[in-house]
Image (cartoon, rainbow, N blue to C red):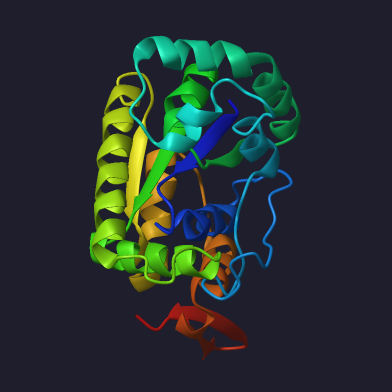
Length: 241
């Protein structure tokens, strides 16, 4: 049975890293590409599922202030937004899932996590990535500045925003977990031991992966972690740590 993998997190929390990891494992992120928008802070680029990203920003949408404001939504608002997106989202699902056992997409809005999960019924596995609050806040602070924001953007302001967003995301995921499986990973764990994380996530999602997928994971996350050793006439991939 085809399964959708929905990646969620907060700004500068490791969602692009997680999408890249899953992509290397064999999850197809349809028309998801890296770009150089955040090249200074994401040297390998930035994962974004643009067509789903755009659904959250429909021109003149009455929901735009709610989506972009970060407030925790009432159930009525979730239902209204779900109905608002249903037709457009399901058209994308039909196209994205063609020919793939596992296909993925990234959700950039906390509010939309529950909505998109509900629309897919029981055929979705959520993967949430978190990051050390301090590191996340520092990275977020730099992102705001790099986009021409307040050059004096206070560190404590970013720390509070990251903490509040994380709390809201956990509340949404707790609700989602009643109907959908939810897996967690962290930015730090993926960087420290990508093979361990990909193996664990593969088991939780129900995927079968081999050495080729593990090689792709290492090449994406940290090429310097790959150590090639000769065994007879074969070069065998090892992880340095």
